[in-house]
Length: 108
Image 1: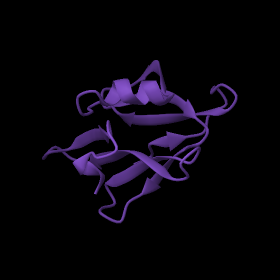
Image 2: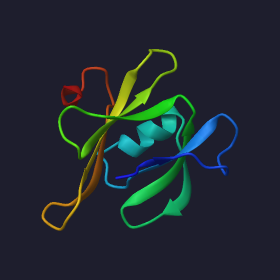
Image 3: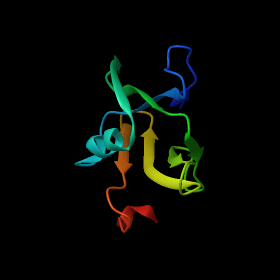
């Protein structure tokens, strides 16, 4: 799953990410509050976003189908969200869980 790409069309100091459209309630609002900008492009599963250059998608130790979205600026390595993608028709598709609070139980 390629969910992050560098693109020459991103504004200076920003980069392009593709993240699953399906998110927890309030998740997209929180990402926008943190600096993501939806470009209006993508496909039926993913939104194309411009995000701050400090954001990074990293693999998780849990599964090859999970990644973690980090912001390296400020709190070095602060986790913003969990990104899930399971290919295939049985429960497949992508989803995004954005941490709305510091004590979100999904952080573990």
